Length: 425
Ligand code: GAL
Image (tube, rainbow, N blue to C red; front, side, top):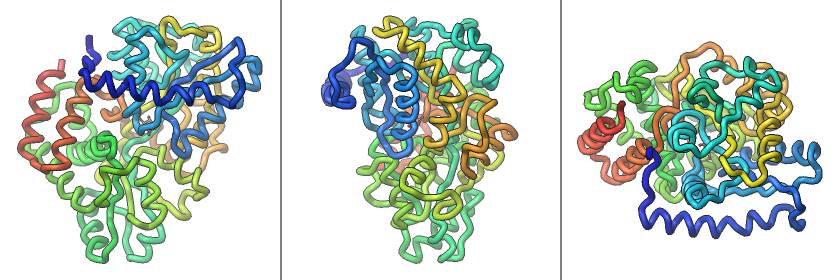
């Protein structure tokens, strides 16, 4: 089995979180559950993502007024808590009707290969939608000729967001290269401004930053090769990326390990920090706070990564044994539809995965992301399930949990190389 075997402590924590999330299930809109229901499992609770989900629920309710929707969310960025709860439920034979899962290895290795999902090619085929999605995306949600999820969005991981007022007050331009990043950090720090916001109370946010640094150091082919085996993990470049990362950690807010990703974005909004590297769900957060792209906040590709789109996609699938299968199929149909995608993505900060959506509904950032997705080199995010199995990612996260404390480059490099030998096929 490719899914990491949960430890006793892991299972206990997951059970505890499952119990914590129960009132959410029951609460819904406060009405008593009706006979038809739909339970959707996700980790979308923060500004932007929660609004996007609510848009979809509104459309679903208008289409199927008799169905009671259970919004089964478990807070924690990147599914840091939700995935454990989901694993417990799936292992216990208690799947939700549909759940958020990243396209790529997370979907395929963890759930599809293990026989836990139903193929849903029929949804795409019956609506004539097979050619409405990019081929490369369909490929990573397919196995043995069948499609196993609906990609609701496409997110970009390698974005640096910055506070425009702070940058202009200090006569700075957002950093384009890793060297410029070092320079900008030095200048800001010398003026008493915390350069970089980080919220890694879930270690994934540090790994998120690391993947951008790896891409900026190795370039797209070198980065991609890390996951296929053609790039060695035992190299001076990896050690140099880790050394950069260690240096950057000196410029982050001191309370980073107590903050969530959205709280870190809020630090940028409040001018407590000048910039942050985060996926473009941060865009959804900025907008949920009433901000306008290019006015209060700006963006550039994370340093050294211009021309490459580090991608991930949130998708929804159909678990075998879904208690409300017909309602789940209707949900997936909505998620795959143009109407659903054009309602969800403008709030979420992502771009639609369908290629025929209405561009005019999207803001300046999102239109730039659409153009980038079409014209740039696309590489998969490891932090968000596209590039490698969850077992490999969990091991990388373990290494980074130690690294953010001891900043020991040689040790982290050795450990990452050892782990890669285990997982590269
Ligand atoms: C990612 C997910 C995004 C967003 C983010 C923060 O893994 O793909 O949709 O939710 O986590 O939670």
